[in-house]
Length: 219
Image 1 (cartoon, rainbow, N blue to C red):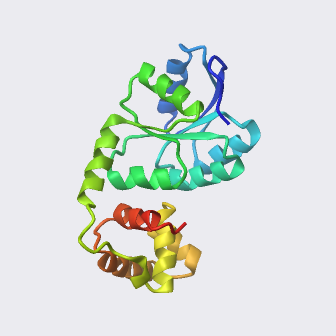
Image 2 (spheres, helix red, strand yellow):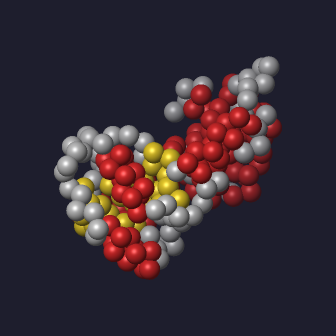
């Protein structure tokens, strides 16, 4: 559901650094269109606060002390698809951005963003649009160009059933550790499966393998 223009947006901040949370609160107080209704320092607390407060938008850090921001994002979207999630992080690499998108995020911003740009991004996402920081957009575009299709595009049909399962979890943004736990495998075995997937799909990065998965309609 889109938030109408002019309506006060209810925002939750999830970041393990107290100074960052305090700084965001102070910054956003200058804009009457945004009401910071709560904050959390861990992924678990963030999910709990989403269940309790049902914010319109969540500002979420990528790395949290108890779990990844990606997992928190998936759990928040499971609570309510109407809750918009924006990653506010220091990481601009292509894999992190695409993993966030696959996890269901509505936006991805770098912490160096200015106050007006941050507020504009929050309002844009609340109205039902997605947004990427210009710097990470360039990283993604560069990565996509490096994935230019060869003469014979790689096919998932060359993968074994277990390799397909591993690839599906990679596309969900899960780490090797999370994949191992999900499939009941050792960390080393997952790494071996993933190495085989990369070789068969002619890719060298997780984001490239995930892109193949998505482009061929396997979800």
